[in-house]
Image (cartoon, rainbow, N blue to C red; front, side):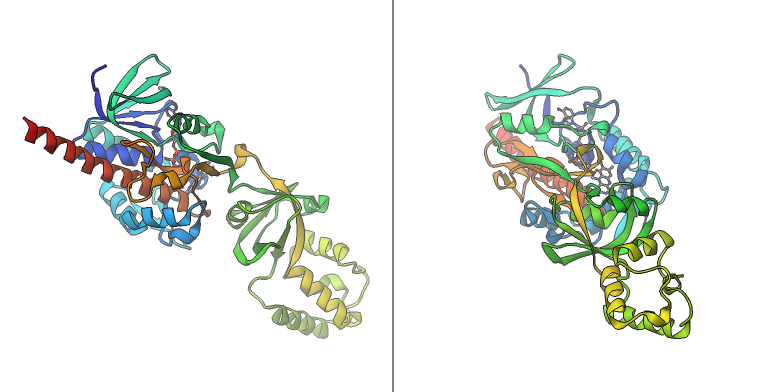
Length: 414
Ligand SMILES: Cc1cc2nc3c(=O)[nH]c(=O)nc-3n(C[C@H](O)[C@H](O)[C@H](O)COP(=O)(O)OP(=O)(O)OC[C@H]3O[C@@H](n4cnc5c(N)ncnc54)[C@H](O)[C@@H]3O)c2cc1C
């Protein structure tokens, strides 16, 4: 089989498009294979359809699996460089707090459109609805066999197949199978960044509420994640909950602080002041304007408070019980939602077998592995896409260097 391309990229998602575009711009003959009908299908659903494409605070401590690997990759292509890259690509964007960046159009599709135009202009060959079924190395080149019967041959191969999360929009196990076929070890893929189900049936009484809370797990009270928590019939979601879900195990306590803006002493003082002001009011008035009705009704049942109690009758012990519940309500984790509802995959290709400087396999020369396929997953808030872009960029840099070397050898030889 003759060599058709310099590089084949399997997976037209975030990291694959980045790698393919940079290689094509450097003059390499690039083939980009995508099993779905269009590039970047998963990007379309990111950030609730608005694509939180990077976070200026991206650094190794925002990643699980192998934070050091992530740190090295992010040094090569930090979030600032990412913003510059998207500037050049023609995407207008804005910051929306906590370092999170979104396209100004409010549409994820703008990211895909910018890439699609740039890839076309750079001359990359794009084949959608074309799944790579088998890939191997023979006689120094990579061969890829596809679902449409086509076979391709190239000098370099990039596995940018993403993870198993969100199978309804392109997530799959295919990339792990391909990496395994090259001898790579796969750390058990499991859902991350997913809603947490709670054992307490009473949580259904809070369904529909969105409350600003600090959340932590009993095993790791130091990691307090603040943000808006959304309550559903069976559990909780929201960016901070998704970030914690990576560590949550059935039986753990999920501690919610419904008043993170106050210390316990401040909150108690506030309640006492109110009780002193309205001594003849009933206990419910203590919470009016402070907690929404479904929450204070549940609180009164949970803390064993009688509805007819007058504010004047509340003693110090009861104030303490209220404060400790509102500022540290322990719910019990039943489990985390499946891949179908997860935004990311924990586990994947063991990062120890891949060079962080180049995203190149340490087992097979010329093979590169990028993005979520690796055993690296980030917090919620633009960190996963930042890692995907950065790893695709790092692989493209390494490929360009290798390509340059092999060409100069050829020229010297001729
Ligand atoms: C609902 C949701 C919301 C999210 N929101 C955000 C967010 O706002 N910010 C953020 O940073 N991250 C977000 N993420 C995570 C982010 O989308 C991923 O981490 C990121 O897209 C990973 O990039 P990737 O290149 O590794 O894989 P992907 O972008 O998933 O791309 C992989 C591509 O490879 C293709 N593929 C797989 N196997 C084959 C094969 N054998 N042959 C051909 N093609 C193949 C897939 O179809 C897919 O298109 C979200 C994820 C989900 C599911």
